[in-house]
Length: 123
Image (cartoon, rainbow, N blue to C red; front, side):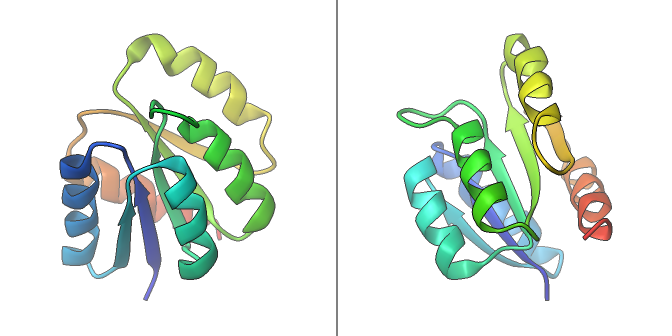
């Protein structure tokens, strides 16, 4: 069973996304900050990290940097609700050692699951 870690500072969003993945046959966990997400990723060893970009304290892209370094097999999908961030997110993701999926919030569950499946297929 594939493992998905959802990291979003909005608990309702994180818990809802976790539920979407669980209902689709994944093992899923939620974390509510970048620091908590890094700690959880070390314990849970996810196949996919689904991460919000804009969070208080450390942002999601700093978490992505850590996870790509520490868990080379983990695929990454980032979410942003701010279209103004989209270009900088794309630029930073191009510098990473592996492809990163980018979706804007809100997104349809089917789009989310399709993008997740495409990333996991490259593992």
